[in-house]
Length: 287
Ligand code: NAP
Image 1 (cartoon, rainbow, N blue to C red):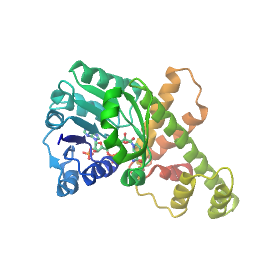
Image 2: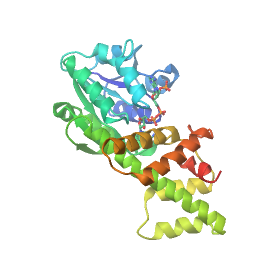
Image 3: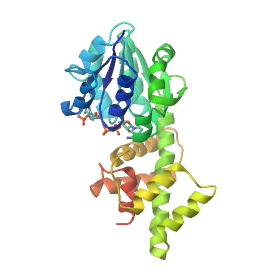
Image 4: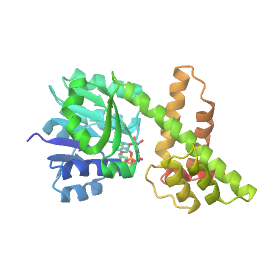
């Protein structure tokens, strides 16, 4: 059976690769910090010494990395993924990056005879564990078709949106909406607090009408308990806001709400909340 590669075993990558192993696929893994390979190695994954070893020995390699800098380093760095890419091999980068980074990697991979698919995901740690992510893909259609059975082990919905860059843009727009919603929820909770209204009552009212949504319910209750373990690290949310605002600049689209929300996430990073969940922006709004 053909082997599959997986680069990047953070919160999302570990859960997603685990689902491939559980489904019986032979998987070769690599992560910059070696300790994060232990759990999956215990499930039968082969551990490689470099990204190039993974891409050279696997038909399709998946990557799930922090940001554009990480996606770039793992692809183009010494013993990077690109070195192992040969004729027909597939590279599926699921990291959330900007369209320019995605297109640069696409061009490099196809330049070596490989095939490239960007496949950022909507959904967080729990959907990654449950295999219910939403894939927003763009790039090589034949690679999408070939990788689909594996993507189906990791997600419940799979959109192919066209050329490389389209999936990246869709992902940034979705997260921009989410980041703004989180900010307005936190401002509502802060204002309710100052007005002497109970946070639980505000959440109950929101959950009872047209504004009800799973994120307000889950994160609202975490905020009231001052509980911020990272499902979606705040530093990644700020990266997505920054990239979405940059897309707005590029396309001359005013993004007042997103730009304001971005400032709160930046403040939260400056206050030391980078590695907490993105709902910790509440602490910056109330600081
Ligand atoms: P994470 O837990 O912070 O993991 C980041 C991964 O990137 C780790 O494997 C890390 O390696 C690696 N990495 C960072 N910089 C690197 C570099 N310079 N060279 C090599 N590897 C590097 O992040 P995550 O939550 O899994 O998110 C991964 C991606 O999915 C991000 O683009 C994020 O925006 C996106 N995403 C996240 C969520 C979510 O809810 N968490 C949801 C949808 C999309 P080390 O272990 O060595 O640090």
